[in-house]
Length: 502
Ligand code: KIV
Ligand code: ZN
Image (cartoon, rainbow, N blue to C red; front, side, top):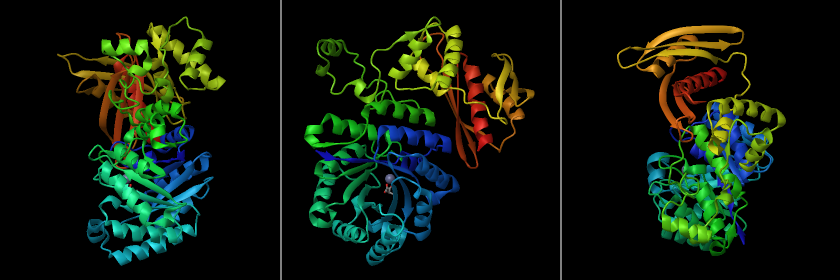
């Protein structure tokens, strides 16, 4: 069986998409989830891009032990220097250099002739190679490049020391048949590819990123670049979970495998959706809420008789716990601890003590606590408050269809208590305005607000996600409560505390 390397670019190509920005602590949490998944390479960012990008690549390079860590760099010395400084502490550092090779990019964007592109590839791959031994070269817009020129570029990059050659479908233009043909053509035209990884990086503009990536694997590619949940530029990148589960489910057909721990997929995917504050689409393959739900009677009947009638993979194989369980205020600590373990969460004794406190507080308000509640509580577990942070003490709201909504909010920070009152366009707006009078941070505005119930029923937990925009980007705040106004206030304070910390 061939081993297919999974190169994850959630923290680079994924993170650069609108509304997918993450902050340092979130990126580190995500990188650790990718390490548990056992991706081969984590592309942690584009180090030259900003101070924040450099810092996150460097921190991830220092923290991750079981994956290679890469930084992207243009074919420019300053980019390569910055990428090197950011990844050099990694157990296995990689510099990923790229240059466009299609006629349209060379003429209009780079304003470079073919000869100049070849010289630059030679010069810059050699320069990167003088810094670290593992160099990947990407021919940006490869699928719209002249195949004969692409061959010259690849030969040049390999001669200069590249160990991985990546073929990006930058604009999501190719189709699976063409991709298979291109990979076969490159393999037969470039014997130097023997011993070098041939990789693909597909965008999803026409909804074919996964199909194109798999066509490349079938034709001989040995690395696939992808992102969790398929996030990425425009329509996104090829989704990691779909590629991995397809190779796993159709192992014999591909005669290939990956080293991914598939039973970590559900948890990693959920973590990303939570960090971004996005709901999991109902019908998303592999990780969607309905991906393993059998609704039609005839299907249910078949599955009961034999799961294989309608199930090509099991929920357990992606780490989705099968038998749902319900807890309540009489549930013991051990039962809760065991269930958390079954759901894939191993807490320290101290974390468990804290968790059990919030579990009991919720059990006082809510009769039945199920897996989704447990996961929501975990996600919102109160991080120890830092000195300068604010937390909610109490609030009062007066609202109705004949009165102007007004809110009184009292917050605590350190030893001090602050109280403010404000009117607003509805109770949430009034509460946020009162909070803004207390918490003085950089100019900001509310960019987005979502509310969803974690489970069904009148006493369901409400989860609110707010996106707060500043000149430097967007932060995500989250709040959880059986009261949706309280959840909104908690989310807003959570976001503002993040701004204070940054
Ligand atoms: O889509 C693309 O071409 C890229 C490269 C930088 C690999 O993201
Ligand atoms: Zn890309």
